[in-house]
Amino acid sequence: KAEGDKIRRKYPDRVPVIVEKAPKARYLVPSDLTVGQFYFLIRKRIHLRPEDALFFFVNNVIPPTSATMGSLYQEHHEEDYFLYIAYSDENVYGNK
Image: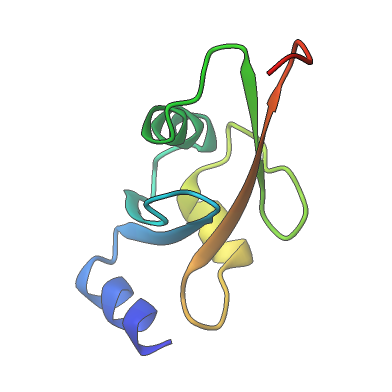
């Protein structure tokens, strides 16, 4: 909790995010970054193939791609001041 609070005070215009299942799990992203832009960033980071679909879940709900990370953070951050995002990646053609 102290770490998330410290990060928010030091970088008030940034959102501390933990992406569960990702190799590099912690990110500090601009508040005005959209979920769609964050999808692109994570797709590149985890080296996802074009035929693989990527789904984010925040509290078991898929957030709209037009939402900003700041608004998602305000609505869903945990007590430790981090926003937790889980993801699922699937091959949309059914063959791996």
